[in-house]
Figure: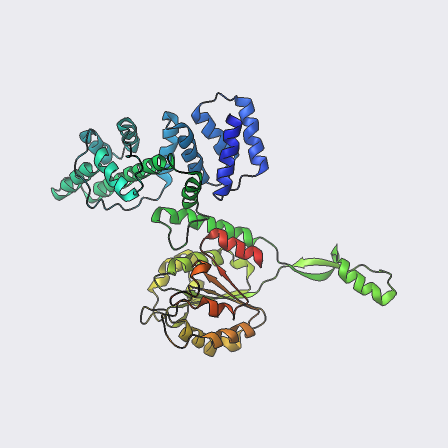
Amino acid sequence: MMEYLLLDMARLLRRAGIHVGTPELEDCLQGLNHLGTKISKYAFYQLVNTTMIKTPWGAEFVLWLTELYYGPDPELSNDHLQLLSRRQVTEVTGEGLGSSGQGAPVELLAEAVLKKNIGLIYAVLQGLNIRLEPHWEDEERALEFFRERSGWGEVRRRVEESRRRGELGEEEYAQAWETLSEWNRLLQDQIELQMIQTMSGQVLLDELKKHNPRTIDFLAGEERQIEPMFREIQKLGRRLAVRPGRRHQVAGKGTIALSRTVRRALQTGGIPLAPVRVRRKPAKPDLWLLCDMSNSVSPFSYFMLLFVYATQSRYAHIRTFLFVDALLEVTEHFQGQDWSDALHSMKRLKGFNLTGYSHYGKVLQQFAAEHLTQLSRKTTVIILGDGKNNGYKPEGHEALAQIKESAAALYWLNPLSRNLWGTADCLMEKYEENCTGAWPCCNIQQLEQFLLSL
């Protein structure tokens, strides 16, 4: 029974985008043989977490699946709270909620909020055992219901009232809201778990993918998901940065190049008198980035810039341009400070957003007029954006063709799904014709697929 459960969990984790290889599964099964099949739920969770999972955020998946299969466990609760403490606190508005908890010990919970005792709050929630009504699929409505029944709304009201009366200082008020936010996240976790227990396998898989930083849409990530997404994209960047290039050069020592040796042997009657040896020479192209900073796609550009600057050792030189309806080079902005600080301060720059509406045709023509002669066969140009020209003329096809002709390669990464290209005011189907390649790049997984295709 336990062996089948492990195999089922491994299958789900793989389909959700978490790498679980044969060695990890073998380690887990061997551990189960040593511990026996009648192990506690907490021991089972620890076994899977230490053998199958290789990412910091994967532990939450295992905890979630273990509670789904077995129900909550007191020892698992402690790990649940440790995972909670690592999450980024999200802002909770609480608008339109009820103001009293039915059966909830409000006085005790209010004291726990002021003392930042999230463990006590979690224990009270387990005791209340709030359940969803059957077939209740509206998460917002469910969250309102859970807030009301758990006393969250009443405690929030008391915190606000205490602040108005001057009983709470700014620091105490901020700490209380941090605890309220963690409490809110506990309620969301309980709702997700109860909903999943009534879901089909495909819906369960979709829910798992929604929590995987590698498959979360760049344009749809929630505040609490941004940090793990940043970590994953930096990890991908570091991995690429240390991967050697594919160019080879003739050398006195190195690997024998069979094709070159055969060609040389033709000069000596087909006898390979001297084998040709080659060694790998790192290829370092110049990289030019054109980043759409309009509100609809700027989060995508931030992620891509973070990735590029994590891999900057692979490039001889990087030039960066921002645009909405005008082109602005910001290469010196990144050179003059730490790149993470440069990313945070980038939107304060002036000169690339005059109207607030992207105008690709104008920007591409400006780029061609000002920089076309500087492109070379060592230059790779990457455009980051959704290709929406907002109905403006010109559309920029001719300028794009000139850029492709002058550079070594012209790639376009688009955060929109391919089925949206060519719809409404998106001109990607036309732009794609004048690119070396154009790829949908909605998440980290698709970015990795693009890199593997090069």
